[in-house]
Length: 355
Image 1 (tube, helix red, strand yellow):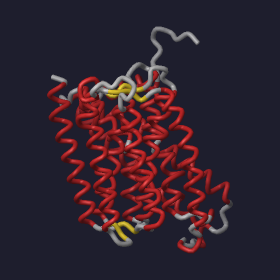
Image 2 (image 1 turned 120 degrees about the horizontal axis):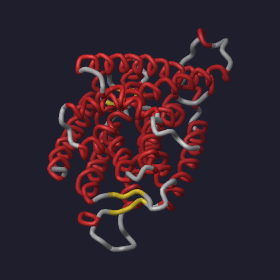
Image 3 (image 1 turned 60 degrees about the vertical axis):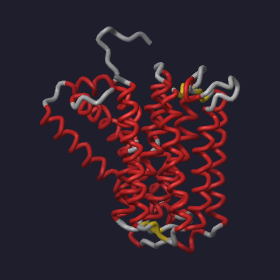
Image 4 (image 1 turned 90 degrees about the vertical axis):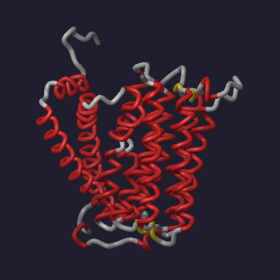
């Protein structure tokens, strides 16, 4: 296919559109897109709960698999496009930054809104996979073959490991469903007479439409936020490490907050845990798999972003171990403070490096 000189991709058209907006209009448009995103996420949560009722799977598992696959799609799209367009560090930075954002900012906010119900058996099993996935990503990026110091020379997530991650992704989804069935999920589900007449295929179709709306609204919102950040003078390095990760994590943010407000905390926790695992196996894995040279991990990743990711996962893991059947607000506050500390460090160090 040969493109005409005046041809622009949809992403370029969106960037040009927001570039030509006045500051006031840009702010109004961002608010409008957020409103659409919030409504779509509300629908997504509702349909996910109904599906869990009809399928016999606990909401925490629905959140960790079906919903997480949908809400992680923006990260995957951005990272794969970045990798194929010669920006592998952006791909890996987006995946790592999204884990930090999901666990620290999003789960922290959701927990502050309302203590989240936490089915301990499922959260523990899924949570250890989340914890292990973070360490696996660090190990896979480490320059074992060369013996170089990653703090000075960085590392690489190879194409081979990308395919390994995709294989583990299939295993993770199958294992999640197996655990849910073994736990006897039907005993803990709510019943809804209003949705009893709907067929299961129709419920799945409505859920997919809701996911498409969430992803579509996020796709439009990302260039708008990028333009706003550019006008505020934020450096490109910080945008790659923090803003893009935040933008692609917006579906998880709105979904988790909406789930918390509707007292479906188990769906919120499941969505975040699943999104973290998928950011490693799906987002980083897919991006590495389509890139022959793999994904570059600059030294700054080993100095700040990867330690920050492990720190937020450790805080969450310890917090869950010390919690009862709910995640209380103090843990949410601690996650939020940890996230802010990581972001301040990232802005300081990466911003100084980019000057």
